[in-house]
Image 1: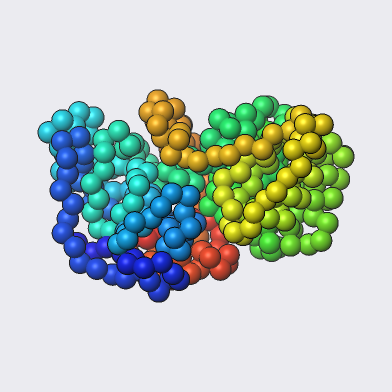
Image 2: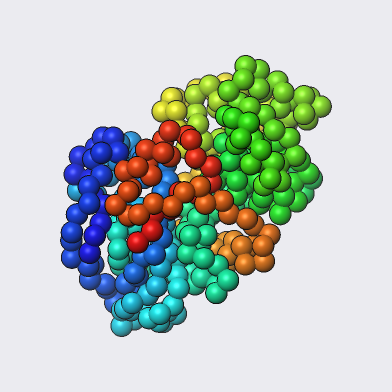
Length: 324
């Protein structure tokens, strides 16, 4: 089968097309013919050797896959060949086949496309659990979503509304991206490349600040996001795209009863019931039409380097997908 592999850390060009054997499944695994693979910043971090856990070489990136089961292990109970499934995996999603543990799979409803389903394992689940599990969003609260036209951001804007947020403030780096966030349901728009954007956020909340903020850039964006928080507000950190460290004044957090919360999806996956329930809920939102997914671009598997290049260039909106 074909796969995309890196043998050294570096830029997009280290991603090479290779021919390797199909994986051999274990007793509690299934073999999935991959139809769609998600492209994420985590894949970029893996490629650059900057991921939160070590990336051994050689390495096949790709954590989100959707496809059709072609073979099942002898102890698999819930799935059969021919079923359409989606999953979050450790690696090897940039390939034509993957061996996947039964416990991580979710069935795809008939009305949901592979390219939509594959937006959920990482970005959909991230948005869901940042808002509900970690951010503890309550009805009527105000939410600040950075990079609101991106994969996580566009879903988070919609989920915040579904979960009962009173006001969603979306930030992005261009008028085009802000317009997309508006289409997703954002109430107010802020360009975070403009000086003093954090003051505008506070103005939009009549000086109170936001109750929940999603932050994945780090550095100056993180520091200014803290200034946007209301008393008892929560910043949920799920990345550091800028590569900058984010020092903070713990005393200021104490004075205003604010929280900075870290989020790492693999920890959620350890709780099977929570992980499966959120998957089912998200797929249901797509099937019902309550959640609209933006596919920012589809690429052939062999074009993985170009897909990552476009993702890093921040010129895309929505989800980037590799197809086989």
